[in-house]
Image (tube, rainbow, N blue to C red; front, top):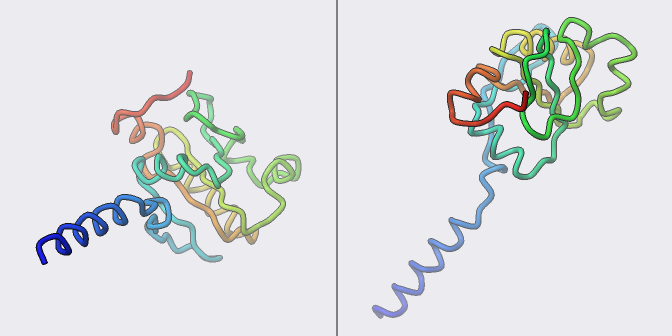
Length: 140
C-alpha cells in the first residue's frame, strides 16, 4: 500500500512538472471598441518565448533596444501603414505580441491592430521597463 502511494505521488509530481506553462497563459483581456487584446506580464512573455509560437514586435519610438528574439520593429503610430502591415503575419489569427518601453505605445498599436481585424494580439504590460525590472535583459 505504501509503495502504491509513493508511486502515485511520484507520477503526480512528474506529470505536473511536465505540463507546459505556455498553455496556461491566459493574459488579462483588454476590451476595445472593435474587440479585445490581452495584456501579459514579463514572466508570461518569457514562458511564451520558450515556445516561440508568436511574432514579437517592438513598437517603441525612438528605438531603445529589443527583447531577444524580436521579429520586427515598427513605430506604434505607423503600425497600420500598408508597408508595415505587409511585414506582419498574413494570417490575422496569428499570435502577435507587441511591446514598447512602458506599455502605452504598444497598447495603442494593439488597439489599432484589433480594429483592423487581428484576433490574437498580446501586449507586454509595463513594456521593457517591466521586463528589466523582472531581471531580464534588453539588447541595445
